Each structure stands twice: as structure tokens, then as C-alpha cells.
Amino acid sequence: MYSTVYTGGLHGMESYLARVEVDASRGLPGFEMVGLLGSEVKEARERIRVALKNAEAALPPVRITVNISPASLHKEGTSYDLPVAVGILVSTGMIPQDYVKDSMIAGELGLSGEIKPVRGILPMALEAKKQGLKRCIVPLENLAEAQLVEGIKILGAGCLIQLIELLQCRDGIPENLLYKDIMYMEKTEKNTDADSLSGNVAANMERTADLAETLPDFADVSGQESAKRAAVVAAAGFHHLLMIGPPGSGKTMLARCIPSILPPLSTQERLEVTKVRSVAGLMEEGAGLLKNRPFISPHHTVTSRALTGGGQVPRPGLISLAHRGVLFLDELTEFKRATLDLLRQPMEERRVQIARNSGTYVYPSDFMLVAAMNPCPCGYYPDRNRCRCTPGEVQRYLNRVSGPILDRMDIFTEVSRIDFAGLAGENAGTGADSRSLRMQVMEARARQEARYAGTGLRFNSQLGPGEIRKYCRLGLAQQQYMEQLFHALQLSARAYHRIIRLARTLADLDGKDTIGQVHLSEAACYRMADGKYWRKKG
Image (cartoon, rainbow, N blue to C red; front, side, top):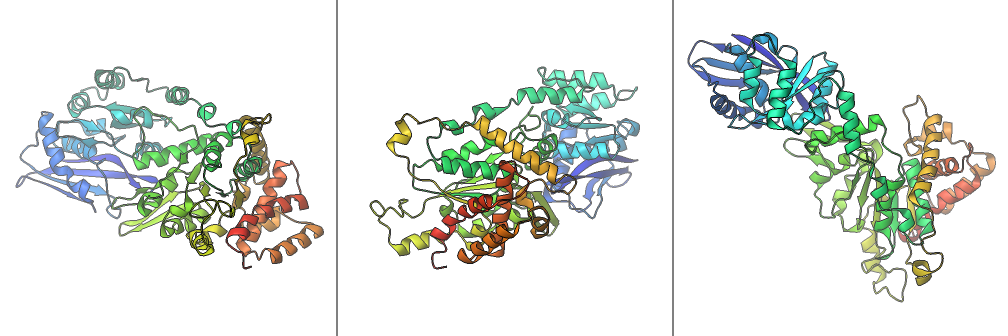
């Protein structure tokens, strides 16, 4: 007997609808699986065989052939276990085909028949809805994640034997009973209202309370007004920021405060960052849509694969987990130069591509890079009273960061040591707090959204040369000023465009429609540290 069951496959960030075809026929008993399968899928044969036996549905002595299509796409992961098992049950006559014809089924099987969670359930459920299916049957631990998708029924199953009993009901799948018997029997504390997915999303939002109030606040940072200003400019235009200063000057604290001034994620952005975590297999049980912008801070010993993603079965890396948020690289010069250089393409294209024999995998990486570093090995250059490094040591230390990476940084700012008055004086702790700074950022963002409506652009940092000519027109005096800066600072074309983009953001912060010389001057100041430390000879 022939049967068909639908499941979801993953290719990069996207899911596709896969069809599991099962044929049970007379002949020498056997169990074969075809369809360009990875090792995890091939190993499913023994898991499925034993799980069915322990679920009191042992395989009959027939020849079983399983094909997973489309055969042109490489199948990876363990999410095919459950749909293959259900397909076998249908083909052997234990479950009617009509009961599962409009269902997307995904899940891993344990030898006991337990249905285990798998990664990528959210994009699978989205694809099932897009393809017009009526329901998804997913592992119980993936239920809350799948319920984020509205307009399709999501059924959670904890073990195979209970799912079989319910799928064998003569009257078809009893939706309410399925929820009650499977979900409450296994996890009585779970919310099981399948028909109010929007309510489940709202409940998840309540559980994921806004953490902005618990994040470090800029009001807690003493002094460093110029660095705070640089952080606000970076947040307003989603520009990359590099902070240089001695140990203990507050670079790390400043970086950790930046998420507190970023606008909240939009609904679309929440879906994007949640999909990344789902595909990476990092969704916690019961977690809903992520509400806060990611803040990823890898250690300087991070491997290239962990940073950019990859592996035999490709998964998103840390730069993708930082999508729509902040990637903070502390002690920048301690990272391997080859590792840092891997960021060059993602910083420009805002995505990362991983090539494998099975195809090319694309993951989003639209992050705001914030980096911090010391100016020399001891950390106190150019203070010759404390610095004991030779000029050669300083230069070798700085050269650990390649020129192309420096060219991609929009803002360079020096973070100086705080004196006693700044720490304990009358004016200590009187600077602007994150709430007021966030309002400035959101107002500047609103101007950008209005300006770029319908263009596919969102931030000033995304402007290319053509868009700069259109949206950042300079007056004659401003053009002459930029010509002087271009020759004086020996700017590359990329650095020139970054100054213009920065000036556009500064004008937005000031509420101005046109870029003034004061904006160009401040933007150029954010390149001075680059010239001071790396381009002295020019």
C-alpha cells in the first residue's frame, strides 16, 4: 500500500515542504530509504523500527520503501523520524490516509517512542501555512514555538503511542481530544487553546517582559560624554563603532549599555531573530517571539566556524544570532586576524553565505558591530608616563586589525580614563540616561524610515554611492569642505562615503533635512582616531 505524508525540510533560513512517500509491498522483508539523504536521516531506520515496536506497532514482514522528495535537495537532521513513522503506519493500514493528508509532521523519535524536539519548527510551520496545509503535528517541546504562527492548527505530541491511538480514531482526528490527551497528560501546565494563536503570542509577550529596564543604563556611566555621543550616533544610523582606550576606562560598560538605547524590535524583526534561533536549535521550551534585540559577545578565542556558521550540517553562527542587534567584540586585537577578516563580506552584504557540496546556505547577519580595544599591549599608549611599549610593539599590536576591517568601521572614538572628579565629584552621574537617549535615537530612526519608505532601505548606514548622491546632497560650501578633508585625511572611497552617511545621521539627530558643515565636521572627527593610530604616515 502506498502513502504520502508531508514534512518540512530546512535549507539555510528557509523551509520547504517535503513529501514522504512510503510503499509497503509483498516481498523479502526490508526497510530502504532514498532521496539524497544525510547520515542522520539514514540512521532513522533503526530508530523508527525500535520506536514502532515499543509503541506496540511493530513492522509487519513486508518490504518498505521510503522516498523523501524533492530528491534534488539534500535532507539533513532528525525531523524526518516522525513523518516516516506515520507514513509507515498509513501504508500498513494502521492509520487512514485521510487523517494526515493535510498535516505537516515533524519530530525526532527516541527508542522508547518518545517524540523529541527538533530545530527549525517555526519556519516549517510558516511554510506549512503558506502551502495551504490545515495543521502541524510537532513535538510537545516545540509547541509554543509553532503556535507563534497564526491561521493553522498546531498539535503537540509527547510520545508515539498516544499519537497512534488518536490517529486511529474512526471519526478522524478529534482536535480537542488530541490536545487534552496528549498535551495535558504529558505536560499539564501547558496552555492548550489551539484556536487562539494570537492569544498565545500575547501571552508569550507577557512572559518575555521588556528587559530594557534591567539593562545597564548610560546614567550609570560616569563621564565619557564624547563616547556616549558616539554610541548614540551609531545606534541612530546602525553604524559600526570602534572604541579605543586604556583598561578600566569603561569601554565594555558603554558597549553593554547600547542595547538600552536601541528601539524595540518590530513584529517582522522579532520573527526574523526568532527564526534564526529556531534554525540554530537554541529556542528554549515555551519561549515565544524574542522581544529584545540580540547582544552577542563572543570570546576572542572563538573559532571561525562558530563566528560565521557552518559545520557538516550548516547552522547559523554568532554573527547571524546577532542579526538585528549588536555584535560586541571586546579586546578586538586578541582575535585572530583571519577570524576578523571573515567579517568583511557579512558587514557589507548583511548576510553570510556558506558553500557546501549540498548547496549554498544563506543566513542573515544584519548586525551593528561594536568593538573595543586597547591602544597597545600594556594599554596605556600614548601616555608615555605609564606606557612601556616600544613604537614597534605598538604598531605590531595595532596591525592585528586589518585595513579592510578598519575601513568598514564607521565611528572611531577614544575612551579616556576618568579622573576622581568624574567619579566622585558633584557632577558625577548627572549625564543623560538611556531612556532620554533612546528617544533621540527613535526620532532619528523615524526620519530615516520616512525618507526611505518604499525603497527597501531602513538606515543611513545602508546607503550606497547612488543613494548617497540622491539623499545626501551637499551644498557648494559643504562640497569644498569635504574636498579638503578628503586630501587632508587621505580618505579611501569607502571612508569618504562613511563620513557622508555619518553626517546624514547627525543631521537626523538634529532634526535637519540638509547636511551642514557642522555635521560633516563631527563626522570627520569620528575618523581622527583612525589617522592617529593607523595612518600616521599619511
